[in-house]
Length: 142
Image (cartoon, rainbow, N blue to C red; front, side, top):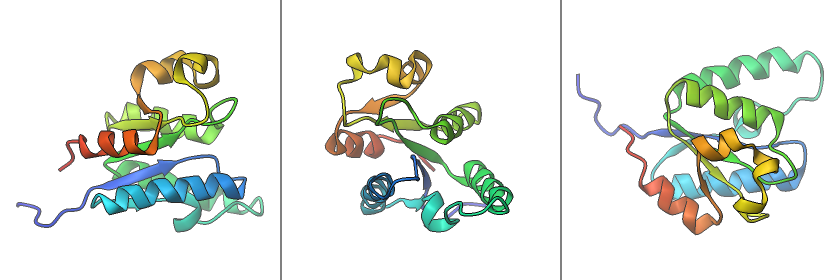
């Protein structure tokens, strides 16, 4: 059966504790959506953690989305990659799905200790939003 009008879906992985981080993730989602992709944003589509009881619900839905999304963009800004972001990126790699990164706060060659050599070696990383747009355009998604 041929899928008609299929729109690939991109998972946006980013730290979510600070409003500025969520706004950055939303900017990335808008870039993806403007290019014709659907997006999954954990804080928008599942909600934020506020009580211990939220953990199971959030983890279950995020995991479901990791399986169903076709690709990922991970935010690598900061003095180290967020634990959740790194885990999600590794999981998508294990599923053999395309993973892109974006790091706009520091030059990549000066940031290897921030993002790890394994991420730098396995993920195409953009240093600007224009560069990310180009990498997203080059994704070969069904």
